Length: 307
Image (cartoon, rainbow, N blue to C red; front, side, top):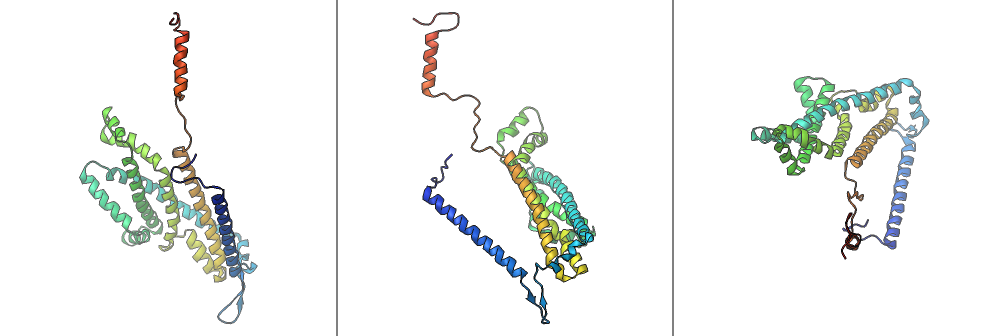
């Protein structure tokens, strides 16, 4: 299926694009190799001694200790626990914000808009510190509430946009069959808007998972604090890069998994582009004329055709 926005590339354009892709891949791989070699090279210290490279076995022998992996696993569970509770709060607040923001009465809609703009304009870390210092909730609930409120505001705006994008006849049909405006919003409009905005909501939950690392500042023992603070302080700074790289790989694996899930949901919930499923066969003018002639030649059932 050709696009109407631009012409299909010819053989020379495809060859040129393939060459650019190969050259770009080679440059990226060369950069990765040079970076790995630079990190693995021995480095002189301030006192004249030579420190082993970051790939030296002496910087990785600490991972033979089972207690190290237990500490890292505890940080992973703490991160997932904060992300899960924050996601539940964000989804609930997102529904509430979307209903309040799209309400018919200004007494509800205007205050909701002011609160949303205030929450969206405040940095998440500043909100964590504010909740921790003012309400003395502890590091866990300071992070959870800040993540839930902030991401709930973003999700609420996404749901409101989904509701507004629906045809107006959806709401009118609900009102015509006797539903109240609130019941129409909740039973007809909201399920469609939620399904339509589900990929965006899941993508925002990926952002929420990454933002759990900000709880490092408020003292919560999540994965980043365990890997970049607690373990290097106990075993020594010579292992700092090793712990940092392990934490980086774990974060990357979790975020890529959620991102893949978001793309999977987007493919399943979005329209199937390029696939047409007509409900009835399409007839050409020639086929239509042939069918008409056939009806005159055979005649109706129970009677002769025209002479």
